[in-house]
Image (cartoon, rainbow, N blue to C red; front, side, top):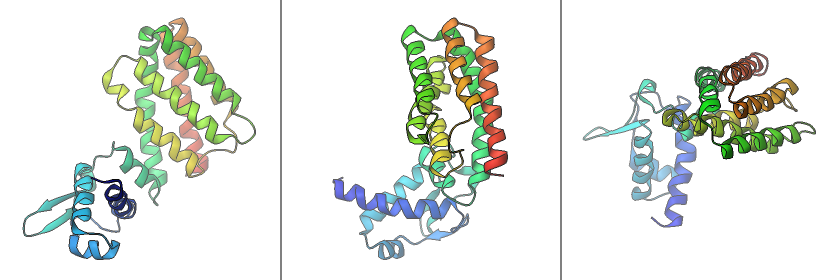
Length: 233
């Protein structure tokens, strides 16, 4: 498909996706593609491409003689980064952030413990670099720079665990961290204690101390939940 074609169906998705995840089209709603094509002023082929993307996320399904039907929320691919992004942009943000942060608290401490056992020297060096980058951007309202290093830090932890399932959650964690920053569910400067904990996790992984790496990472996730109690009750 041409760049223009991708741009058009992307424009449709940027509006229709958030509307579906926000509940403006409740489960069971039938979307008429011809009506939507008129609404967005796009061709039916562009509209069909947008529907195919929504189907791949299990947000909708196409039925003969019925049309495009919105699926129940229980069937959505809630791990899809785009679905996460759309949900975080809506009114359901506090519950979604809490759900994802609880997921992190269940996975990341274990991943950090595994990383202490399996991380390569290159991954240890990368983890330290990320932690120091977080320190460097933790003051002076440099949240965007801080975010880049924070996302990279947690990706390395998940990948260094040696568990392919954990590694695939890197995009999910990235969306949580990005959503917190973009939607102002962060303090103007990160919590100094949390920044220090990231440095200590990097040290524990490098030292091969699995128990300490897991314990420190659990402190990070507990702190993230406590921040949500304040910023997104």
